[in-house]
Amino acid sequence: MTATKGRRQRHPQAPSEKRRYQVKRAVFAVCLILLAAALATLGTWQVERLAWKRDLIARVDQRVHAAPVPAPTRADWSKVNAADDEYRRVTAVGMLANDKETLVYASTILGPGYWVMAPLTLADGASILVNRGFVPTDRRDSASRREGELSGPVEITGLMRMTEPKGSLLQSNDVAADRWYSRDVAAIAEKRGISAVAPYFIDADATANPGGLPVGGLTIIAFPNNHLLYAITWYGLAAMVLALLVFILRGEKAAMKRSG
Image (cartoon, rainbow, N blue to C red; front, top):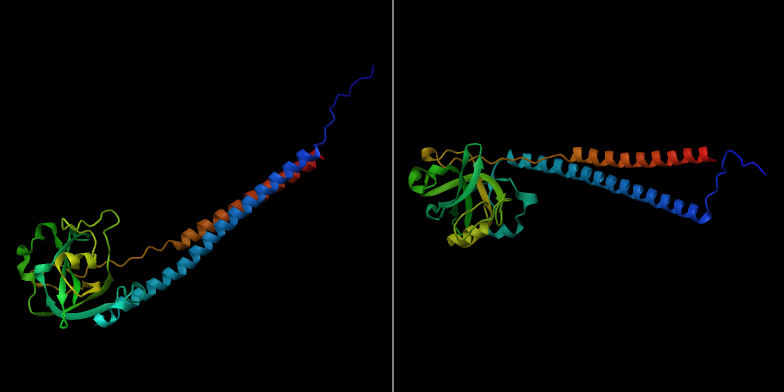
């Protein structure tokens, strides 16, 4: 009777089984490479966004500190756009229609209250909505701040802003109830019966109004710029995925040498 050997002989993998394993390994490797490529693409996109944001900040800073220019007239309204005109310092002369003012909810460094939006009627009959500034909640009634309701021709200087349609991020404008959470030029003009209104509005500067209200010059200009951090994060994740792929392949190679 022949004695069996104490050590079992390894059975080589069947060709079909080995082939399936190789295919699975190749698919897994390709998936990791594609994932790393996608993450790197997101990182590159954030780098491009960083360049765009820095250019935007530089342009806006230049506009804010430039000398004021006349606000675009009716003939130029069709050319107005955020990229070229947002935060440009402008001036306009006209008559304030205080009886058509609109209160827009605001949260400012002075606390909660309202922006006072009033149409400025120009010499040609057109109008520009002007954010005259902030009033606290207990002074929302125009009767409590009559001194600030300017009469006669006035010159408004401030920052050119683009319309804010429909409402804020959290709340929509309720036109029927006359509750406003954003400065929607077209909707306010329609509600107040203002025709020929500019597609932008002006944030009045800090020039004091009689009686101290409304308080102008409270425009906050801030552009979050986290694109560099995001780019580093995406590139870092891509590097981690590639490192994982290398680690797995090296581990398999070492295992194959030991089993061979």
